[in-house]
Structures are given as structure tokens and as C-alpha cells.
Length: 231
Image (cartoon, rainbow, N blue to C red):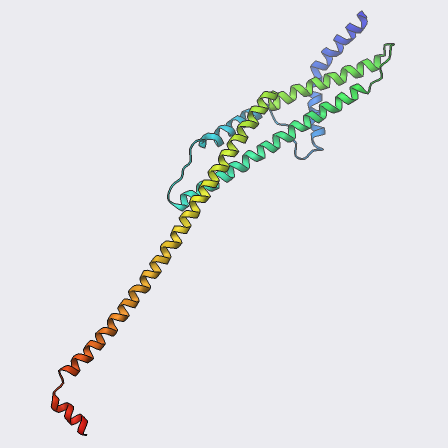
């Protein structure tokens, strides 16, 4: 029993010194089988936080203005922000699933080891190795993604922001539709007013011509009219 404990402590120390580096290389090799999953550096959580801070800076602020150009530009910003948030959600979910798949695989391998009454050095070393790899994967996952609570809070913040963006996009599109409809109505009114002015001008010129003819008839000499009729 003393030899077993001594052997176990020596193995743990040896694996602690070099096992983490080997495990990270091992994980990188496995991650290459999944194109959508890439192990990130320890700075990844900071980058996530900075992105969330930047994309959520517009929360509670909706820059609705009367000009359609400003609204169109803000609409593009919101759509881009929504795409980034959805991409981050998908990427983190894939990485989390990959870590869980590795842990599940190690658990299955550990459970598949034979249970014997007599001590087996090879079986015991294999079990210790699998348990050590599982611990290291949990540590790596927490360094990359944070705790389960951190992941849940981060996902909830993104979802909340996406929902707000959807509301803002809907309101802006409504505003743009009203602005476009108002522009068309103003154009129709201007066209109708122009046609009415042209008709009035045409009618006025016709009335002036008739009045001129009547005036000429009224002031024409009677003798001239008599000569006209007798010719």
C-alpha cells in the first residue's frame, strides 16, 4: 500500500510538470478534426468582454431621426452587431460542446476499464491517466470559457441584446416605411398641383381669346358689317 501511494505521488508530480503541455498539444491535435472549433488563448475571455461592452453600448439608446439616410445607416449598424453576436454565440457553443465531448469520451474509457479484485498496475495507471486528462480538460475549458455560470451569464447578455436589436430594427423599418410612403404622397400631390396649374393657365388663355373676339364684334362699325353682307 505504501509503494502504491509513493508510486501514485511520483506519477502525479511527473504528470503535473509536463502533462499539461502534452495535453494541450493533444487537444490541439483533436481540435483540428473539427474545423469550427479552435482553442483560444487565455486572453479570449477578455476579448469577449470587450466585444460585449462595445456592442451593448447602444443598449437603451435608439437613434431614431427623421432623415431616412441616418436611419438606414443605423439599421446597417444594428444588423452587423446582430450578426457578430450570433456568430459569437455559435462559436462558443461549438467550443463548449467539443470540451464536453472530450470529457464524455474520457468518462467512457474510464468506465470501460475492467474491475478486478486483485490489484493491476497497468489498469491503475491507465485509470489515473484518464482521470488526470479529464481534470486538465476541465481546467482548460474554464480558462478558455470561464465557469458554467460565466458562460450562462454571457449567453444571456447576448440573447437580451439580440432581442433589443430585433425590436429596434423593426421600429426603424416601420419608420422608414412611413417616411417612404410620405415621400410618395408628397410627390403625387406636387404632380397633381402642377397639372391643375397647367389646366388653369390653359383655361385662362382660352377665355381671354373669346373675350377678345367678342370685343372686336361689339366695336365693329355698322357700315362695315353692311358692306360685308352685301358683297
